[in-house]
Every structure is written in C-alpha cells, then in structure tokens.
Length: 300
Image 1 (cartoon, rainbow, N blue to C red):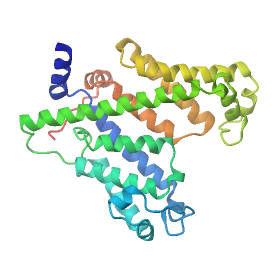
Image 2: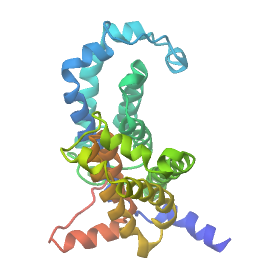
Image 3: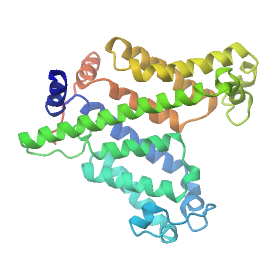
Image 4: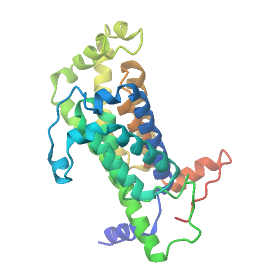
C-alpha cells in the first residue's frame, strides 16, 4: 500500500517527463507537416470530391453531425485550418486546446480515407490524443505566461502530464508486445520466410543489396527472431534502469534498419520519436549539460 501511495503522490508532485513531452510535441507537429507536404499534390484525390474511395458516414461523423461529402467539397479549407493548427502547436500557441483540435482533424482526415493511413499515422493519432491531456508546453514555446500557475493547478498539470507520458510509453509497449504475439503465431515469421519475402520482393527493396541478402537463410531467420525477441523483451526491460539504454539502442537499430532496408518510413519515424520519453527530465538535463546546453522550463 505504501508503494502505491507513494506512486500516487509522485504523479502529482514530480514533473518527470515534461521536457521530452515538449520535444515530442514539436517532433510530431513537424512530422505531420512533412506528411502533409509529401501528399500535397494528391490531397484532392485523397480527400476531395474526386477521391478514389467511397466512404459513407461512419459513427464518428454521425455523432458530430458531419457529412462526408460536404467535408470533401471543402477539403481545401480543412487542410488550410489543419496547417495553421500544426504551426500553432509547433510554437505552443493555444496549448492543449490546439492539440485537441489537431487530434480531431487528424482523426477526421483518417476516417475520410482510411486506405492511405499507415502504421505511423495509427500511432500518431493516439499520441495526439495523449498530448492534448498533458502539458507539453513547458519548453519550446513562443509565448510564456507572466505569472505561474497556482499550486493546486500546477499539481493537476503535473498529474495529467505524467498520465499522458505514461499512456504513450504504455501504448508503445503494448504495440510491441501485441506484434510479438502475432509473429509468434506465424510459422512464416518463425522460419524467417516473412523477412525473406520482404527482402526478395520489389515493394520493400530499399537498397541494391536486398536481393543478395535474401539468399542467406540464416540471416533472414536471425532478423525475424531478433524482431520477435526484441518486441517481447522491450515491454519488460525498458522499465529497468540498467536495461533501458540497451533496449532503446536495440530499438533504434531495428527501426533504422527497417527504414533504410525496407522503405517503411512513417511507422519507424513515429516510434523513434517516442523513445526519448523513457528518460526523465533529470536524465535529459544531465545529458545536455555535458554539451553545455541548459534548459529552462516556462511558467505555463
């Protein structure tokens, strides 16, 4: 009981993750801007009236009394507002209210054309929801409050910030663990055939060496089992201080390998962005001080 009581008290009193939560807010905003610019020439085909996908009003649109066809007819205005919100969020303007609006816009665009979504966007939607709960505006903002919060509001802010950071970290762990469960049930993954098909196929041919590497069966099976073991191990050992850095380095190797070898970009970028959240403010400050970088939170 004492352990749980102390844990509960720490949620209100110890601001442990606000620095990297601010970094994540900036990183996700830039990532969404990048995704929008990449798709810019095709936005009309994806979201406009001439979209190649026919979508009827789903439960979310019906609940909000929104008509998909009307949204598609005015998609330029929606994209414009979305871009402004991303710019505001990048600078910390509007804070959690802006973050909530971005989540709603991202969810709307996703449901207007679910076939253009990818693993990175699936994860990003949850991150946006969690960012709208926590305070990711202690660092890297344009405008700062002149007066700090009252003690009671500050404790509440710290509580929801810790909850938001915890939800993101837990979500990452669940994503890895569920992926490992699925792979363990697949003979193609256990035998390395799934990795072979990826390396031997043209769709994921990220380098000129993929086809040659596919001929080494032991390598394909080793990569498959490295992925499975890592996805099982990450949720267990990333919380252990002595193992955390090792798990993060292994994750960086896994995701950068997929990024360059298989040309699966969005999913890897979003997951790589989340890794820094597993280190506390104190650990980040200690690291940055070695490079003579001092960080100071804003009074928000």
